[in-house]
Length: 106
Image 1 (cartoon, rainbow, N blue to C red):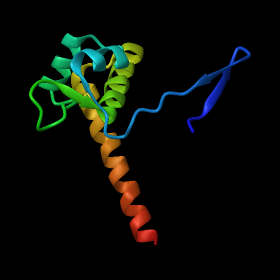
Image 2: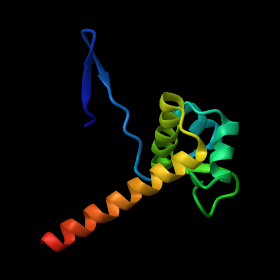
Image 3: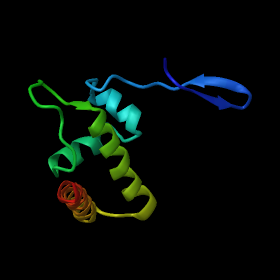
Image 4: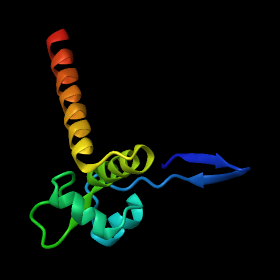
């Protein structure tokens, strides 16, 4: 059963895509609210990667979230591509350090 959220007196069913869902570039563009051309620029700069073993540009849920985060940094704070790369690298390093900390704490 999928969860419901109350919205203005009505229940709205929350959409939860399957974990292995894959979307073409047009769908990814729509879902992430990022123009198709911008997604291609982000791919060229290795900020986001399409799913491997496919012909064309297909993206999974993780890539959609990453696109949204990249676009938020760009639109809200005016961060350029070099800055976004730096921020994403720092976030990745933080995740790695958290994992190591949990591993050694056990």
